[in-house]
Image (tube, rainbow, N blue to C red; front, side, top):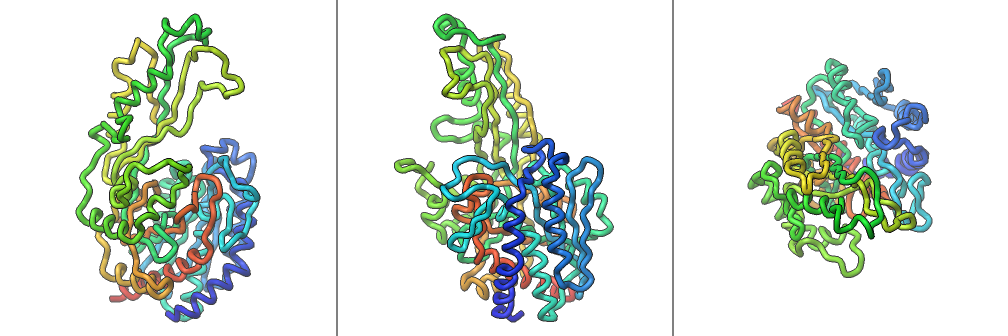
Length: 471
């Protein structure tokens, strides 16, 4: 592949075609169904699907078929099929649904109005994960334009990834004959440690989400009369959380949430720490004076990729400050989000947490932990020599630096599902979510130069996959 030509053509395609469509896409508030239960009535998801499908149909790729699949109340699925000019099948994945707005956007920025600034496209969903379909088809088109063979390609863009991908297993099963058995899966929904090289995701943590509910009173009472008689629901919550988490170190105390870390992953984490150094901490927006759990980048990488963690991500029953009177609260609900090691059984972990939180409730309070979702993680299969070589050559040709390998702290349900379904398949799980890209939070942005270079890297891997299939 002529990399200089490919990089030039990709930059031109982004400038003239992809960026304008991504701007239109960012303006659509197509929040994932968990955050917009009335998504069907609002029609935003259909608008996003039609926007992407329209762009796809414009691409000059011989034999390209584009279809939006809708079944009853399920979220739509965008399916693109490209005949192979070489043997084999490659499956490419992304998603179109978005996280909610969140607060804290910087002045001049907002979730639903795109802003181009310093080579970055700001707005909700551009990086997570709207660019994926555009980069996928652009990579395939680059090969067509240079006459380079590639395997048959199937591109799946789902619409409920941010809600746990609950519709995707149905579609994958229904489309099994059209998907076939891919020798390569390319997922463009992951992170990158920096914007200086290609990053390959080696693992994904699982996720357990549930609501801890504590009830003590049937109604709120004046704190002057009730405190000292009735226990505080907030204090009971602290007691219960201390059963599962060390409140000084943050270490989780549930055996079912821990796993041995493979030696290869320890080695890769050490190498990544050597490259990233202070960037491991620098990508987190600490307030002045705040500090991380440790100053060792290696330990922090393991914390975010292979060790379990707990985050309290929401609360119910707490009045706003303006409306908070001197009242002893009758009830408190906390949304708990646990990240699990890639190899753990999420269902077993959920059962263990539920048992720990609900047994022998303090003061006989009414306590429940309702599991909302429990998603398994993923640990990548051994990397084939051809894929390792291809990624290294692609990274050096486009970025001037070798490929790096790193686990991801988040979850992509689709990858775990495919790993079970296709145990002999090779995976390139990568993405543009680098330092300060801030997916799910305020000021989300797509690093445009990185996205362009990544697109060319994907084209190189698709080309080499076809050669490997021939061999």
